[in-house]
Image (cartoon, rainbow over all chains, first blue to last red; front, side, top):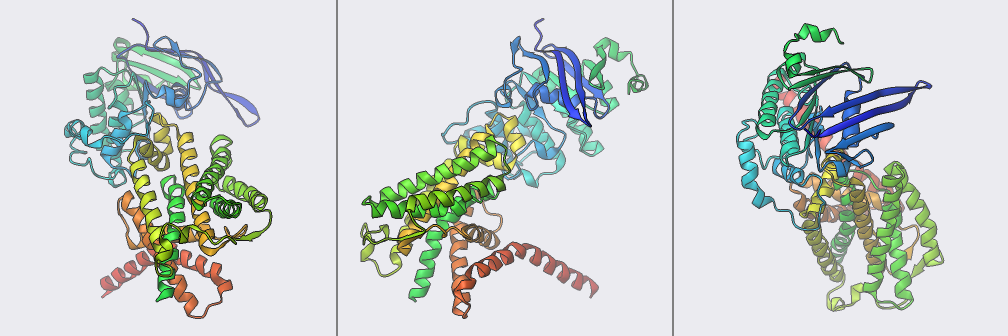
Length: 249
Length: 296
C-alpha cells in the first residue's frame, strides 16, 4: 500500500536558555490511507510541533514530509490546506465568531481553493449544510446563529464539521475534546469516530485521555522528548491496558 | 437652520472617512494610524492637481490611488516585515508628512480656482450646504453598495474571516497577508478620497489637517454602534453615517454653548471617550439598579 504521509528524519530545533533544544528529534513516521493514528505524550513531548510541521504552520529545521509521495516540506500552510485539515484544542481557534454557522461552513467548503471576486453562494449550499448538521443534535437549526453565541462544545463540533466538510486527505485532531466538559467531550469523540469510519478518513489524533487512546484508532504512538518511543498496530494495542501505557509517561 | 444643514452636510462627508476606517478597525480588527497621514495625502493631492488644471474627478481618483499606496506601505511593514500594526501606521503616517509637503510644496495651499466638485454637475443650483448633503449621500451610497457587494464575495468573506480569526482563516487556506493588504489599501484609499473632498469643500489643503481624524472616524463608528447595537454588517455601514451626523451635531451644540474652537480636539477626544465608556457605564448603572431592587 502506498503511504499517505511519510515523515523522514524530522528535526525541529529551537534556541532555549542559551542552548539548542530538539523539540522533534529525528522522527520517522509513515501513515497509510484510512489509518486512525492516536498520538500520546506528556506536555512538551513535541506532539503539537509535529502537527505544526505537517500543516506547515511551523517549518522543520531539517527532514522531509511527503504526502502521497510528493514532497510538501517547503509548501506553505495555504497550499497544504488543500489536503490537510486540522481541529485545534481551543474551541475558539477553529471558527470565525462574527460569522454564522452556515457562513463558517461555506468558508471551509472552499478550503485550500482561491477566494475569487465572485458572489458567495450561501443559498444553494444551505440544503447540504442542513443535512450535515441534522445528525448533530447540538447544532440542529443553528445554521443562522452567529458562532460567538454557541457553547464551547457546539463551536468545537462546528470546527470538526469545517475540517471534514471537504473530505481531507489527512485529518489532524489536536486534543480537540480537551477543553470540553466530560459529557460533551465524550459526545464529540463519538461523533468524531463515527464520521471518521463512515467517510474512511485518514486521521492523526493527539489526546491526553488514555481511555480514548485505548478505545479509538487502529494505531498508537507515544512521543517522549521529541522521539517516538512506542509504535503499536491495532493488534498490539489491544493487548495493552491503560496501566501498561502509563509506564511510558 | 443653515448651521444645522451645514452640520449634517459635514456629517455626511466625514462619514465616508469613517467607513474607510471601519474596514481596518472593525473588519480587520486593528487600529490603523496611517489614516492621519493618508487623509491629508488625499487633500494635498486633490488641491495640487486641481490647481495645476486637472479635473476635480481626476484629482479624487488620484487621491484614492495615493491613499491605496499609503495603505500598501503600512501593509508591507505589518504583514511582510512583521512590524506591529500600531508602529507600522505611525511610521507611514510620519513618512507621509514629508511626502505631503513634497506634493504641496509648502505647508498649506488654497484652492484659487473657482471650480470644485461641490459646485459642479448641477450641485451649484442647490441651496447653500445642500450640495454637500447630496454629494455626500451619492458617494456614501456608492461606497456602501460596492462594499456590501464586495463583502459578499468569496474574497470579501475571506477578509472578514481574516479579521475574525486569523488562525482559522490561514488554516483553511486563506492568504491572510493578501487580505491585510486589500483591507489597508481600500481603507486608506477611501480615507484619502475623503481628504480630497474635505479639502475641496473647505477650499484649502494643509499638511496638518490629518491630526485627530482617527478620533473623528472612531467617534462616528462607536456612536453608530451605541445607537444601533447588534445589527448585521451591511446595516452597520449605514449606522456609521448616522453616528457621523450625531457626532457633528454634538460638536455643534458644544461650540454653540460657547466653548473655544481651540478646544475642538479636546472636546472630540472627550466625546469619543464617553462613547467608548458608555456600554460600561450603562452596565454598571443597570447592575446598581438591579442590586437596588434586590435590597428592597
